[in-house]
Amino acid sequence: MTRWDKRADMVVHEAEPFNAESNPVVLAESYLTEVDRFYSRNHGPIPNISAQGWTLTVDGLVGVPLTLTLAELQSGFARHEVTATLQCAGNRRADLIAVKPIPGEDPWGPAAISTATWTGVRLADVLAAADLDPRATDIAFDAPDVSQLADPPQHYGSSISAAKAGADEVLLVWEMDGVALPRLHGGPVRVVVPGYIGARSVKWINRITAQDKPSDNHFQATAYRLLPAEADPDSAGPGVGLPLSVLSINSAILQPADHTTVAAGPQTVAGYAFSGGGRTIARVEVSIDRGEHWVQADLGEQVNPWAWVLWHAMLDLPAGPVTVAARAFDSSAGTQPESPAQLWNPKGYMNNAWPYVRLTAEPR
Ligand SMILES: Nc1nc2c(c(=O)[nH]1)N[C@H]1C(S)=C(S)[C@@H](COP(=O)(O)O)O[C@H]1N2
Ligand SMILES: [Mo]
Image (cartoon, rainbow, N blue to C red; front, side):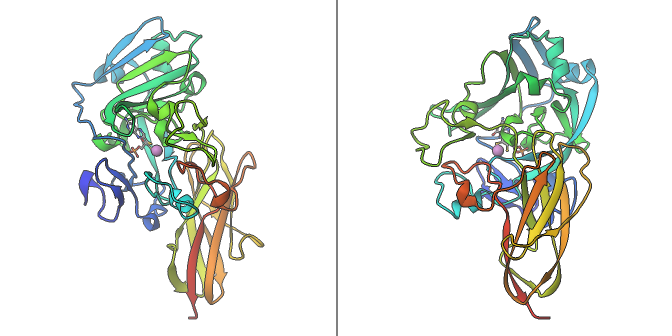
């Protein structure tokens, strides 16, 4: 075990604030990611908030502002569960950095993504209890952790549209896979916004504000925006670039590991595929000739549109160096672009290019 009760084989990008992803090879081995393998992304020191001391304020464009304790949240609203995949907007950034450096951002591999079953109450039910004003277009979330990445330093926050906030799958959760939400993952309470970039699933949430514009928090207004390739990220202030929310279709090859030697002949290749916005995974294909020919992968179950698919395919590898590529299609026929160079952006977000693993196949 390493810090925060994570497995010793986690890939730790930063110890403080703690930023770590699973060893990619083991990630595809279970549909629900074990909590001690679940990636974690933090922008500041992890707050320590007791369940007894926690309160949630609901204010802004509401008829009845609320202050709720955990006991009131748990007893006042119907309990719901959602199995949902969280994916950081920086997942697979390493492949963008290989195209051109991205200073100041962690080189996440393909495992800044994980799946859990989350238990809590619907955000929509809490907003209804506060008598949400129909003029509210955005629902802002605030948390107490202070990030030095903002200038001046700022607590973490973001927002989602009022339409998404009203959707059944968006929960305020206090349990992850049946255990109390660990402190690292936002305990006592976080929001889970399935199908959106992880940044919107605000941990340690202590305030929800209904408003008629998006949050002006650094992590909504300035960070987590897709800048044009030419933009200078240091001078791009609030409002520049497009705000990221719904995830695009993505996939990764997790087995065999990149840059490894395997036996020529029959070889199983395995990974995940996931798309945002409630779109399901329709097809995954793999290729050993850079996309001239494709082999159909077998898809595992997708328990609901908010959770990933694990897939595997059987390839017949010729002896010698071989590059395996994959691509997924979602239910809107959306698919992945061929090369990360087409997607490079100054903050390195949303890489959904074909994944590649470079293997050496040795004659048996
Ligand atoms: N309060 C707070 N919430 C946060 C963050 C944070 O730094 N502070 N990081 C966000 C980002 S970018 C991601 S990808 C997810 C990661 O959640 P996890 O650590 O539970 O995996 O939390 C989001 N919520
Ligand atoms: Mo993230």
